[in-house]
Length: 437
Image (tube, rainbow, N blue to C red):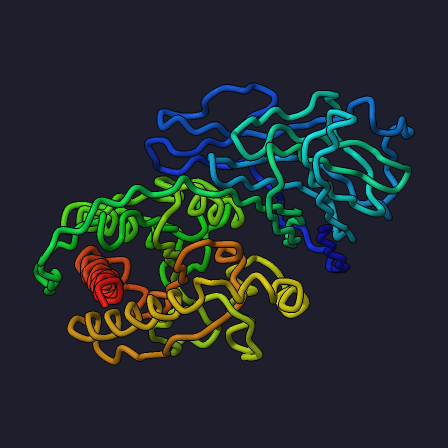
């Protein structure tokens, strides 16, 4: 059954795309580089960009012009595992598009396909090679100038798969998520009369029972410093420091495998951060940020989960973290409405409340006037498409003189790490309790 998505977004802002940075990991997924087709770093991750044109089944349209009324398809990237693949197409401006799914055609020796038509677009890539992926889900990606005004992207699948397609702005990129089926888990027979484990705050829950893997996302990085606080301290530096400390504590105290979306001062597109969490098959995705406000007296802690909202403050904050306009956030809410109402919404809300309570309680012991700004919902692009419980934490205001200076100090960062750890541990305990009911 064909799936059709039709949208039109008309905002012209430039932010500049950048190359994907590899996450800290020891395998389980790779970023593909069609041009070089080789490993990008020590963790077995592949990364890069592909510039490909049509194979013979696309039309021989005239060379790409420079007309400003045409959107240029400038790049294709992908991230893949055996059960999840995300394909990302970089665009010069907003587009209207349609996505369809086709069954295999044995008479023409054609596999199942997903194809996307991008209207009012021209191809701005030179190579005539297709992108070979062959990951068990997706065989290859082909793209060409289907007609004078339509670029067609074809995904040759191994079998019929469900997919989601959505457009993100600033810079514009069309994202296609393909979800496969994980291998059936082999469960050991339950021992008779085995007592139900009771987990206390001092015990270390087994990652095989509760949380197995967490992806921590230190916000911003590289050319994107995030918010700037008193004395010039950058949000990107504080959140990276806290993420590294938290990763070590979670691994040591709870035995949880932790992956960082970035482990240094690197820029990573928002959609790639979510893709890393999906590819790692993480149980939790926590994006760490520092808040900011033109009001120097603004202070406090708040935690967000992904959902639609009419709250003006939440939408302005989402626009800042998304590096886009307030109008873009509003326009995209209806487009992503089906995606945000996912099966993980309740889990995300539960995680958000436990983290928020732990952060307010923990930091109140170290700082004066810690304000509980509550758990809220907003449309953060970094959470879109996440297939696990996922939240975004605003760990106080970097623009507040007191909070900003405190969070630049080691001892206050350690207190924040302890509070985040306690919140994750409480969520893990609740998850274990729910599974034993």
